[in-house]
Length: 165
Image 1 (cartoon, one colour):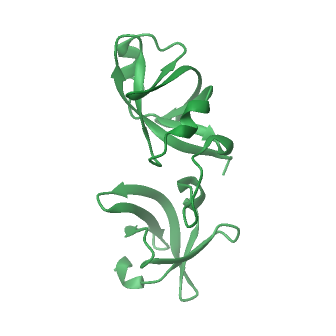
Image 2: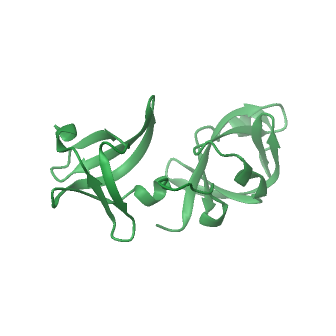
């Protein structure tokens, strides 16, 4: 972990000035209005941008150097990385996706694999678990499947192993 979080994803261009719509991953928007700089990650490459303005309707950004729809379109799908201080605040029982990546998944005292990613599914979030044999499984990130999440120890308890079959 480098202390940065993916807080939103760049969407479609908006208007003629190079504005880009953004989709916050947390559903929260207020923390985005305090941003002055962001790092965009796209295709494994990262680039820092200065934010000229954050707009509320539609939720969008104007980035310095992105001045037309063509330049804005090239950013579509880029992840917006921000320092931990600018991430959306958490409620009890919530976790940052970046903190879940890499957690060892343990069931009945046995290591099953690691959380390699978290995806949004139709009914909520899915933890992508890379099993010890190298295969990958998606498990709903819900209380009936995951017990204790111990970020300090780097472990996530899996309650129902049948979900990996």
